[in-house]
Amino acid sequence: MDGRFAGKKVHVIGLGSLGTGRAVARVLSRRGAEVTVSDIKPARELEGEIAALADTGVTIRAGADAYRGIEEAELVVPSPGVPLDIPPLLRARERGTAVVSEIEVAYWIAPCPIVAVTGTKGKTTTTALIGELLRSEGKRALVGGNIGQPLIGLADRAAADDLLVAEVSSFQLEATQKFRPRVAVLLNLFPDHLDRHADMGVYREAKARIFANQEKEDAAVINRDDPEAWALRTRTRAQIGGYSIEQPDPEGADLAEGWFRVGGERICPARALKLRGRHNLGNALAGLAAARAAGASLKGAADTLSEFPGVEHRLEVVGTVRGVVFVNDSQATTPEAAIAGLEAFDERVVLIAGGRPKVHDFRGLGETIARRGASLVVIGEAAAEIAEAARQAGAEKVMGAKDLAEAVRLARREARPGEVVLLSPACASFDMFANMVERGTKFKELVLELAREGGE
Image (cartoon, rainbow, N blue to C red; front, side, top):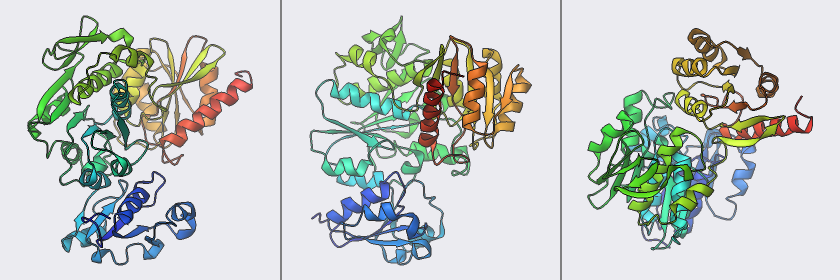
């Protein structure tokens, strides 16, 4: 029983597949709260999610009944996918009810420091790498947040000498109040999620909340090569550690004469990094700087970097079919991310791109496709926009496909041995798939099927 929650009326919104709502309900009900969980989907579509809470004693409301009684709650915790301006949340706020994200509640109960990583791209890779760097020195690092397990579940079972390493999104950060990471990492800021955030300014402010409660004994690791990110260094009271792959930074983390350095100290050769792509050099520097700020010596960093395989759906090599390498980069949901994917390869690339657009400016991607001499296969709602941008830039080979299966076969016929077929969509997946994970998994299935058929 936790005196902070005993008898408190808590309304949790969302029973989605990522499990954030269920985790909040389970943790807070065990700590004595009177928890109601709601979802606007009808109960018949939530049978598995509802069954997962059968032993908790929480109240579940679904469909048209979802938000009944929300005004009586003392605390409302919406899942990250729930916009904060829906009428039930506005009514709750008008009554003075606290509306906070799951990571905020996780911070309240966490007995140990939090290392939080945000940015438009690179969060998952960097978060996972920080965890590995800390574990390699015998530290118990629990990794989760916007990847893997919800942060509240990790906080609930953590010990005082543990470290929580969390990927945190703008959706999670925008509903924080006291959330204070001991180490905060900001990787970059590109236009993203503008279907949810009103404009780039609102998105920027959400990301900046990672610094809002830091104090001088905390650390902020910020990308000096990204002007949007670096400008937010004025928003923290923490000790700032910049990192850069473009300019020397003897006080921060940098790449100098082929070496990764932190605070001017050579850590290991950059060639030790197993991951491909210039952007991953930056992710590695951010990871090294954050791990050092969290107490790691980095003596074994070279071994960790040489063994770290990256994460699923992030420039993940699926296999080779008749000399053509197939790479799953389904996480690339913005044009900038797809550009980074293209630039990760010296080989000629056949790019599969498209889906539901988050932005409508694909000129930079089109220019990169043309400059690299890549072929393009487009799918989904953004197919025409991406194709037009590529043609306007001078791309010579642009093809359309009705779905991902046709795209994979077209790409295979276009690619020659020694070349790469890259799924790097530059778009969200929701026009064709439930999420980017389902899209990436389907791509891998199609590649394995192609291999079984002999690559034809």
